[in-house]
Amino acid sequence: MQPIAENKMGVKPIPSLVLSMSFPIMLSMLVQALYNVVDSLYVSHYSQDALTALTLAFPLQNLLIAVSVGTSIGINSLISRKLGAKDTKAANKAAGNGIILSLLSWLLFAIIGLLFTRRFIGFFTTDAELLRMGHHYSAIVLFFSLGVFIDITCERILQSTGDTVRPMIIQMTGAIINIILDPILIFGLLGAPRMGVVGAAIATVFAQHVSAAMAVYYVRKNREITIAREDLKLEGRTVKDIYAVGLPSIIMQSISTLLNTSLNKILIGFGTTAVAVFGIYFRLQSFIFMPVFGLNSGLIPIIGYNYGAKRPKRITEAIRVGIVVSFIIMTTGFLLFTFFPHIFLGWFNATAEMVAIGVVAMRRISLCFISAGFCIVLGALFQATGDGQITMITSITRQLLFLLPAAYLLGKYYGLDALWFSFIIAETASLILTVFFFIRLYRKKIRPLSTAEQ
Image (cartoon, one colour):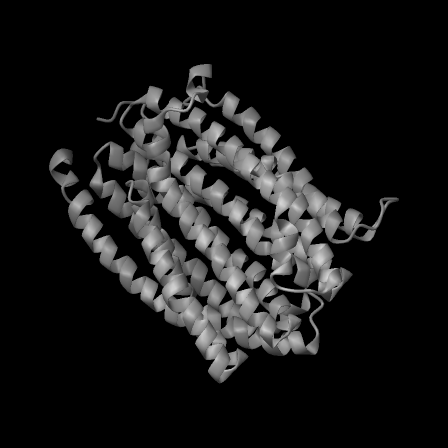
């Protein structure tokens, strides 16, 4: 008999547990995708140059998200494992140290926002208008990024205890505020000045700070994590444990920043329209991928808790359920991108040239959606058991060794339409590596737990 007081992650039936924990996160991640898409939708109706400027600025914004999400994944994994092992003191320490790490990360990006954004945008273009808009947007988003760091960290602390409803509420509140403020500040409605991309940036950071305030309030109300003053003092072992999982995730997502930067540089050789199309695709695909990343976030504390509690059957069942859910989501995305790309592009006021490029891109890239979802789900196992470096290795291989070289070569020798096949090549390599590492980790870490469970 399991003790009545035990956390639901150790006793609730796995299918309903995965769905009940993942669905609110998936919904909140979907709302997070809406953040980026709404900005781009409104900005695309402001001007195509404005949309291109946001696409050029996106790698810096993505780097910010990489650091905040990666660190918080490490916090989530460590807290859930400590709670599973009934070590509440260590779980509180992980939460407190995580908050301090998020503050230090914000200071770094505030400096980047002040000093380096103009140079970054200048790497792509000498066009004065693109340079001005891209610099202003990225500088505001980075300098005022405290809200996003606190928000994401506190949401992951809540998720690590099994609370996924409040993070959903936090995300939805921020998204609604952003959606309301975007048209007002971009186009100058209701007496506000017409600010264009600056208005989009202000709407985003204001909404993020509201979400952060809510997240802090809910963490203070949480009964399983109690952060005392001594928990806010950085402890070497705790920081090391956080970044053992978090740093590979940061590197993995930062590589995505390098990839986007490099792809923008390649695509701008085909014209600014190609860059704008890639920006549209990247935002649209987030509607498909974000729910699967939400599923990943829901699986991490479940797997981490049961790994700490030495219950391998619950771990493997959670992975099976996650794969089924991912397959459903990614198959839906594949069908939508294959049969209705012109409709989605029309939302962004796409020109005939943009539609011609975008339809080909969306149909070809979506061929790898299902395998990508499978890899994301297995990534939850690697991160939850403290082997986040595996996800980093597969990401580096996929993006730097296969995707980027293939995009350059296909684009150079066969043209823009062929370039999109590079995504399929890269995802196939990632799938092979992920399966290999899964088999190895299962034999090394999960199967031996069966003896302890018996």
